[in-house]
Length: 439
Image 1 (cartoon, helix red, strand yellow):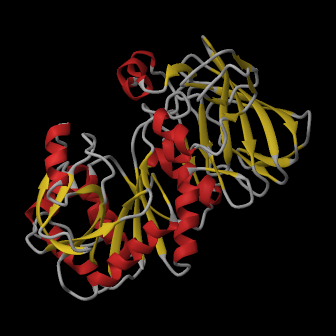
Image 2 (tube, helix red, strand yellow):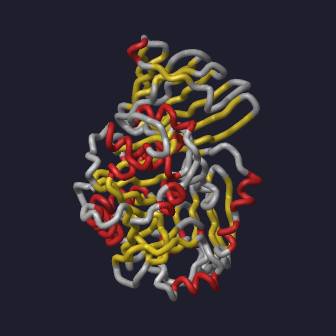
Image 3 (cartoon, one colour):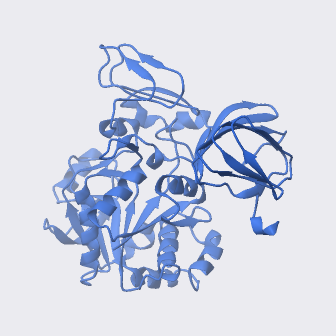
């Protein structure tokens, strides 16, 4: 079974833990069977492997999230990176072309597409696997999963089936309704549209060629910026007459807000925090190295990170987006393929960050035109390469890298470094990458 996981989204609804680099699927608020904290993307990846160890998973994502995915799932995970954002149809098409042209998947094989961030039990992925099996029977061009509604929600689109049977032809789709209309949909056996569907790989590639001119994955990638921004629903689903839906009855939660996330978090407190006995139905997530004390808090969520601090009634937390936009700033924390990057201090003309590298990892070989860097090794051992010259790194060592110098760090053990960036124009865009072979 081939599965494309869509990993996108910005970081507004779970601020301050999420940002444009670390979306909600990367926040570690759940626990695995061994009691270790894990993120949504780690949980989903583990669940798929548990249900179908032979499943081939490819994650379709943006450039800004690729490092976090490799950080959490390892370098071997299959990732299809969009060169820019073009909505769900181009993203799914690019991933489908990647499967066909880069991974050698046959046009006759089934492909299922799922979002990376629902909170579900394993039966959900058993149903995803079933979608692929149904596709192979050639009963319809598209097979969807529909979630059995638990209440007349205004937050989701609806699938109206032709019958109440578990597998049914689709009659029509409905946009997000008001509550009264949603209740009428439920009386027609309607299902929530969770954006889960499967198709034969050749079907989508044929459909794409009727809309775009491209030869293969690499040609499509080169032309990607010119593609029309359009959702998969508008481009394919709503124009397809041969479509069926499978009813899913298991647990399913959309944890897009703090209110919903609090329902499924592993612990009511994560990080340094204390609540008194008068607190009720309150959750705290603290990523700062300072304590939080809550007295008499009821129905609240408190979240603290380097990006800011949120104190909110749980119900009101779902309406925070416009307020977050008023205080939005550069992300103070990011997961890299080699470890983590935490901003400690920002001043005019300088920025201080902490680099935490995992043993055996290495940075890309790169340079900056407009800033110099001063590294102080806090713990661990490794090696620095500056303009081709190697230098052993040990605790207490200080290395200065002038602007324009090519440099990289290799971690032999877990390695913590405090890096002071000095310059009048400090920007993430000020970076040029090289190959060591160029030396």
